[in-house]
Image 1 (cartoon, rainbow, N blue to C red):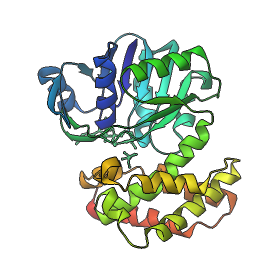
Image 2: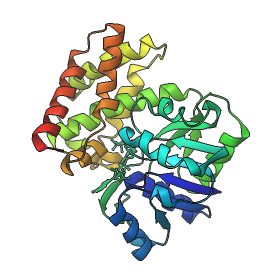
Image 3: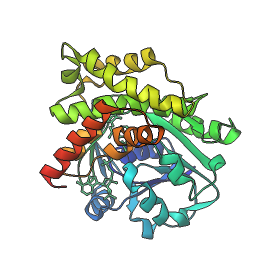
Image 4: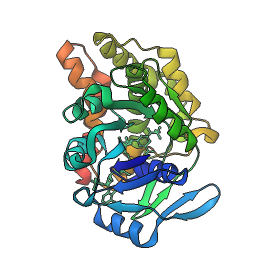
Length: 308
Ligand SMILES: NC(=O)C1=CN([C@@H]2O[C@H](COP(=O)(O)OP(=O)(O)OC[C@H]3O[C@@H](n4cnc5c(N)ncnc54)[C@H](OP(=O)(O)O)[C@@H]3O)[C@@H](O)[C@H]2O)C=CC1
Ligand SMILES: CC(C)(CO)C(=O)C(=O)O
């Protein structure tokens, strides 16, 4: 399959390299010129449990990208989805499927401005990856992917996408209710990405707090109320299990979530698309969400004080 990755940071490089390795033709598209030049001149460096590997793969800025592709996988941070897809329009033909596995709420709605819902594939992933510097990623551990067509139809196209992603080792499952999968992941990120950023520590360190379940409960209860207003009914136990399972060092215990990486690198975080999106919706539905509102303030305060 001809595939382009729109936004080739940590996750874009990881997914792009896996799909290229399994026999697809992959183009990494990104904004960061030094990163692009390093990948083209020296290959992409991937550090994982088995050592350091170098993979030859082609990268370019959006304006230099060529023909229409079969699959465009968007892996920018949520606030850059619109500008990246806008700049990648010449890669999108009438048969191109556009995939988003980004964190946060609102990614499907942004993509819908450029492609109809039946050609959008949305989902979530638990693969954790870090961008160490230009042309270099740390891809420790494994993960899973859940996807579905945004219009919820299970067509042969989505099956084909799941097939090629599975061939690349991505542990893909077609989700019967992708909205629930996305909201569950949002709840997960609203807890772990923010707490690890605020504590400046790993997932397992946050999980070791003796009263952690109380903290998680407070955040999640509010999210479940807001989701209910949109007729998305979340199961609290399964969200709690999803979160507490990764406290184990063998899971992503040692992982520093993407929001923590952004804060350390003085980049803007995705807070507006996580707890910030919950607060915005809560205001609309006139629901009180003091805990999530306070977390948004703390993260924004950190962003402002550090000067992004
Ligand atoms: N990392 C993870 O473990 C996971 C991330 N996700 C989600 O996937 C999406 C993509 O995340 P992720 O891959 O982590 O994003 P990254 O921050 O690694 O990359 C996103 C973009 O940021 C820019 N960028 C990053 N670092 C620098 C730098 N030092 N200098 C200049 N530009 C830089 C690049 O383009 P540009 O200049 O255009 O911004 C890059 O394309 C997000 O929605 C995230 O929440 C989901 C699961 C796990
Ligand atoms: C890897 C994972 C699942 C863990 O928090 C994530 O979504 C992130 O870092 O943003």
